[in-house]
Amino acid sequence: MFIVANRNMILPSQDGSQSFRLKRGFMGNIPDWAAGTGYFSALVKDGKITVPKSRKDKDVRSSKKPKGGPDGKGAPPSEDSPKDAPPQPGPEDQ
Image (cartoon, rainbow, N blue to C red):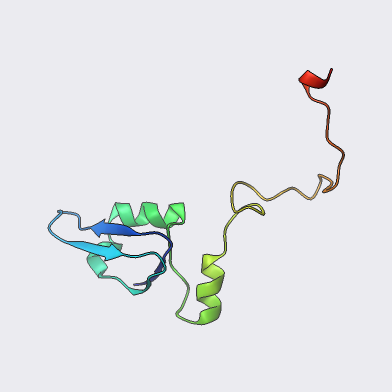
């Protein structure tokens, strides 16, 4: 399976007899046993490993884009909220 590693990590096998080391920025194939673990699935879900649709540059680049808001965290801003709205007074301002 072709992947892109976004962090340094070690993928252990199910039984712990083997491991596969990944360095940040690694792009390449990993063994089938490494891709079949629950740990690998959790890393993909968390975004620490991305699995592009193909090896094409376009697909690799699009798989590395951060998900969520402008800072890559959380949900993107809703279109209903104005971008340049004045700050709302908080409880300490009253």
